[in-house]
Length: 57
Image (tube, rainbow, N blue to C red):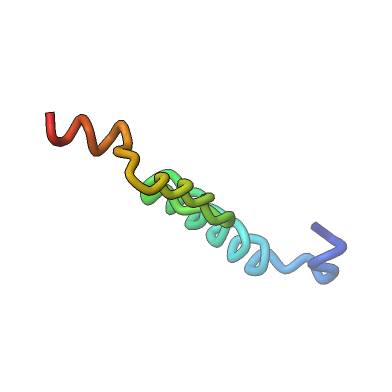
């Protein structure tokens, strides 16, 4: 990390490590991601989806 921290200051290294740890834990706990999920395609007109069918049954 000397290319990002030429002075070798330990505070910057610890701060970055904490940021990465918080990001990792939030992904694990909340399931957050940097990429958005693709939306499911909508059902055709007049077609009952499998999930809707199982709810009514």
